[in-house]
Length: 328
Ligand code: F6P
Image 1 (cartoon, rainbow, N blue to C red):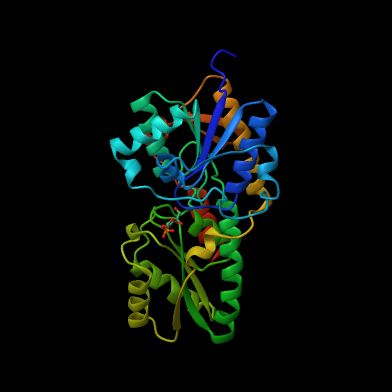
Image 2 (cartoon, protein in one colour):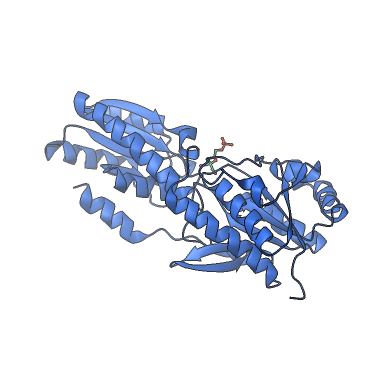
């Protein structure tokens, strides 16, 4: 193989997600399998600029497949956003005879990787890992499935109190500007309503729907609210509005926050991370780079950074229907 890599470096960047460790393990072991030298970069792009490097072998990644977070640590680097920062990063890669870079992270991290690769003609591959599931070029990102399960488990618990006290709970979930967590966890947890940025439900329709639920005999309700500002009103503003207009409900707000990012990865995320880690190294071995690896309709695939950035993500309309019908 003419362009086959001899020394791959890998880092995790942006918000951590469950399954990042499983992806690191898969990359390191695939390198061992093909006898490619592998260097772990600690603290993402910051560690790349500051040369926080450590050579990894197959045994360096033992007992991590089951652990949440990332043992390589992660940052959102401001310095890497500058040309000088990226030049330092490139020089450190060259100085260590590293010929390819694998980035495990989300959209922001891939953007950084794409610019580095363009400015210095350096091969980069992205492995999508974020609980938000907002990356083009893959049906699922690493960590999303685990986050969904965490959210559903939390809402199941909140439901106990909602039922016992006949209360209306507004539960805020993460996802940045993507409604994937809200919509899927909302369906899975049996929410009455789901507020997502991709669909402008509006507070009046929410109000009408909750009044209708009450009339139809529901005594408590769960409304899942995406954290995105694109929904128009934040969760406290929605709560205030409902308190002013909805008689007979006691309202509580619950913000799930960072518990959604932690914990042991689900089996699905471990398998996905393992497959994508192997695919990343094997893609470099075919001489291709500046791409994201992903899974579409159960098939491993790759898409260029550029196409991924241009394509619009579409919401699964059928899921909206499922949510509407099952919450009647
Ligand atoms: O991208 C993952 C994510 O958890 C988003 O869902 C959330 O909006 C953001 O990161 C929170 O970032 P931070 O951990 O920096 O507060």
